[in-house]
Amino acid sequence: MHVFVTGASGHIGLPVVRELLGAGHSVVGLARSDASAEKLVAVGAEALRSTLDDLDALRDTARRADGVIHLAFKHDLALAGGDFMGAVSADLRAVEAIGAALEGSGKPFLNTTGTMILAHSVHGRTGTEEDAGQEGGNPRAASEKLSLLFAKRGVRSSVVRLAPTVHSSLDHHGFIPLLVAAARKNGFVAYVGEGAARWPAVHTLDAANLYRLALESAPAGSHLHAAAEEGVAFRSIAEALGRGLGLPTKSIPAERAGELLGGFLGLIAQLDNPTSSARTRELLGWKPKHAGLLADLAERHYFEIQGP
Image (cartoon, rainbow, N blue to C red):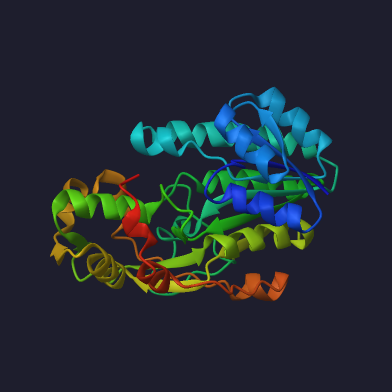
């Protein structure tokens, strides 16, 4: 297939591009900077020098591709810029443009959200692929709903929900580096309350493999979970970070989470999100094989990063 990938030069996107190229596919990746374009060309992909806001370019490139993987999201606007809803709105416009371009083609379209989308709708049990997010709980549920509407319009659309910790030595801007930066600033690693909230996790290269498998064979309308581990207790993550940084680990009250961890991260740190990927593994034959989160933290590469 000739595959169009948005977010193609990022921590997850570039491994996805390499995975696709290694399986014999060709790739055109969206690149919003010359540096991003150079990364794509260096691994053997074509670069489309444009942005997520150029809807005409998205439509035209999607129409000419055999399939689309949508990984891009305005994380800088959502986190550093403090405009999460602005980033959500930009994502919805992009999904609409790509889906409309593929309508009636039968081509695959993989959208990306996160397993945390279930934290507001699933309580007291492990979330599954059959569970739906609540738009009132997490605004990104609207992106899932929109992309899967195209499954009824002749598009083989599906959604990959990424674990909040997509970890590896390639991860320089995700939640783990943010936690490392907060710990260095505070002088200790914080967890909220008893630290019982559980986060699913997946190694970057296992996630990349899942995207390829989904592109090739995921049924229209399916939710897929990129979660190699169902849930690692937040306190265990904090303790592993403490060992790696040589810092104490402390419990903090919920009302101080925003202050000590940052507003968005302080909220996420309190969300219990155990998530199963059993259906995904069965459906696609996905077999994660890389290190789990705590083993990856023990390799110490996260502690060589000087902050996000």
